[in-house]
View 1: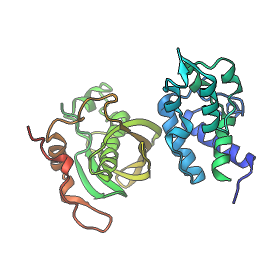
View 2 (view 1 turned 45 degrees about the horizontal axis):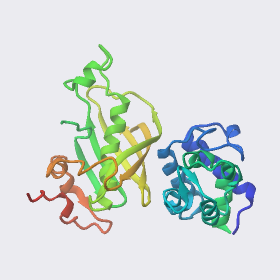
View 3 (view 1 turned 30 degrees about the horizontal axis):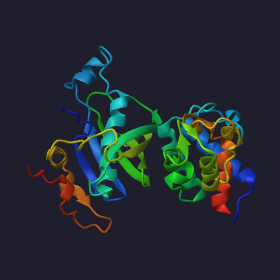
View 4 (view 1 turned 135 degrees about the vertical axis):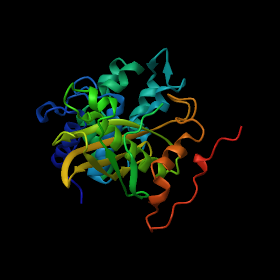
Amino acid sequence: MALSKEEIFEKVQEALVEALGVDDDEVTEEATLVGDLGAESIDFLDIVFKLEKAFSIQIPREELSPEDILTDSNFVQDGIVTTEGIAELKNRMPWANLDTFAQNPRVQDFGNLLTVGDLVGYVSSKTE
Amino acid sequence: MRWFWIDRFTEFVSGECTKGIKNVTMDEEVVDGYWPDYPILPSTLIIEGMAQLGGILVAEYHQFEKQVVLAKVGKASFLKPARNGDQLQYTVTLDSMQDLGATVNAVSHCDGELQAEVDLMFAFLEEGRFTDGPLFGSGDLRTMLRMMNFFSVAVDSQGNDVGEYRALRDEVA
């Protein structure tokens, strides 16, 4: 049974509130996990656990965290992701909105740009 | 280093749950010294005891081949203080097991009443990341488990004795 976007959002919101200790109203679609909600690397493990449990899905690490692309010299030069790299990222993560990142695609910024909306999009793609 | 925050395993079912006890005694420096003139086992060390039980539950699931560390305390609530002379009974249940870590739910009872509830998350250290070798000295983990009665109570999910663990054998020089 496919869940509606609203149902997915609510469950993602609940998982983030529990994992990050933030309030409901801070978890908006546009909020970034790292910048706005204060997520640290260990929190991502917790978030993955909670999402896997809430939606009965498996979340392979590279789907949310494309480190292999971000460390590939074919796709990254001088800390900036190349056009091919952006295309590769879009291919790997079609559910994510990478437009903002693409404007200034510094590798170090990548982790900071993931939003709640991106997570909802990801879960949606896994539960269709 | 002496860092024992449970006294004994009382039950252990591989992959499911484990129970242990912690006796709170006046002679422990931390019980006597934490709050002057008010002996109490600090709640942080109750969490540590639960983490020792839970960490072993998680590590044993992987035959002690993975390096398990406490990564996060999800929730922790303490309903009453743990006083000198109390015996705390911890019950830790496996909640979820994934590639990179695991979560457990733990409770503490004293005199039949709920004393604390804690959710814990463990992570598995990757080879070569954060550590260059085992977390325990050769044979130390096995000795600790033996002293805590682990091998006398540990069974698998069918109720059979657990066998030997290759990873716990002394390293051969």
